[in-house]
Image 1: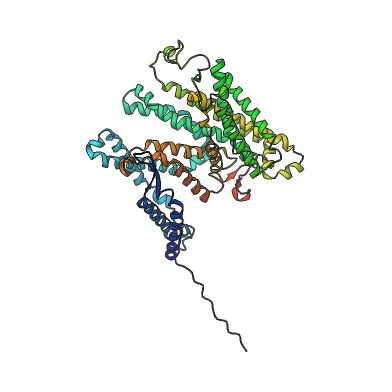
Image 2 (image 1 turned 180 degrees about the vertical axis):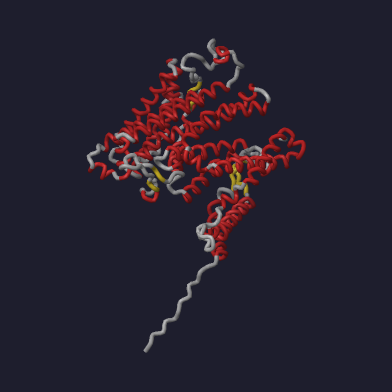
Length: 531
């Protein structure tokens, strides 16, 4: 007697059905997440009473945009990405990439023309188009500039990839000069170029390089030694307060206090290293987090020394190696010595090259240490502490050297921060700073100097760029404040990078020890999160 088997039909959802289902799921999740954050806002009335302002229309807009975005991605984005991997039977070639079709020469020329025309009419856009349309025109100019820069990077991607480090250092070296010259041409005078460069050199140059140096210092602890440190901002604070206190009370020079601040931060790094010698993973992260909060609370409560929450002001500026000063009242003021026009941009440009030199010093020391036995011991400790001990490596000294070296560069950055600001307070060294620095290290790729530098430029530079988007108020309304959305965009960027590049911008790393030939190790062959 034969057995009859009824065939089973596999029900496979079409892309539209799956997109609709996932869009509904995404909308429900967005509604649950944002109902209290966007739908309701706390405010004060005229009687100074706390009230709730209902913003259901804004909540509805966010939920609908979330659903539409998820639907478009599942219905059209995923099938398009899958089709890019299918070989054409007739030609035997993969289809033309989306980037090649997006970055075409006619589009690039059109973007350059748009930028040139809108730049020439920048001063008269409000009169020609009116305030509303002028805002859209400036927004279009910004998009055209971004597209033109992206096109240049795409066209020369092979050359840039082969010489990325050299091109990056060269670009950083000429950045202030280019900014001054461009603004001088735009304003019609060199004085206007120097004055206009203050914002661009300080906010986009110095600010980014400070975080690059901090991230490279933390990279020694987290990326090379594999020790999760959530209190790295404490060493930053130690360096800043060391320079602020010694500089204001004893009048010592920055060039003397810079190594002193690094040594003091390294000392505190060793003190932190001793209690955590037997800890790893989550326990180590908790202890380092507590250490960072202890330092901040000490700065707030030790008022006799640190002046508490009021901070320390009047911190002396950095001199040009004791030869020239940047204080207008001094006899050896740089403008008087060189017989040039007086400007505050000289000090910012000098600070830019100073922090650039400190960053290059950090990178040079890190590269040299990685090739030394202590650097290889750090990497062995990161991969497997038990195997590291079985090889006869002293894990105690290995951890202490990692903490001390990373803390030293944090102290250097802190002393520079105090000299740049002229004022320090505990509010500058909160846990959020540690989280941002750690996020830059992870997003860039732990152990990768180039990836971390790119991550700092994208994250810090991107958030600073929001301050320059005032024209968006004419597009989205006068109550729109772009800089308030910087942390939201920061979080979105983190999620996107972790989805597409889970091991950071640089997913491969070059081993410090190799036989006959040096080869990059793919992130898929390394431990998750250490690629």
